[in-house]
Image (cartoon, rainbow, N blue to C red):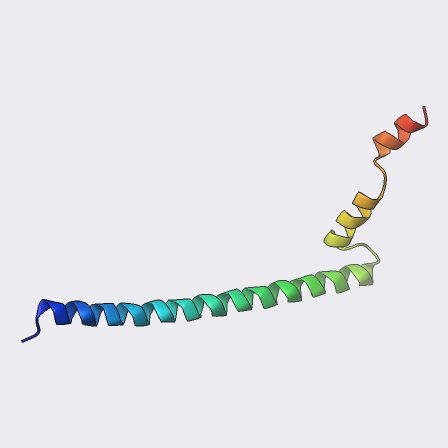
Length: 77
């Protein structure tokens, strides 16, 4: 006959295995997500390069390096 202590130990061991499995799944999903983000970024860059338009990231960088139109107009008045 199995006593409660043995049942608890068995449940704890199974829970540990379950947690390990969930952790492996989580790491695998994070890795897949990261690779897909990289592929999407490369695809967006290649599409924008073929169209001759800046990608989202390049557009933001280009805007931040240009003076603000309102500030530029004020400085000439």
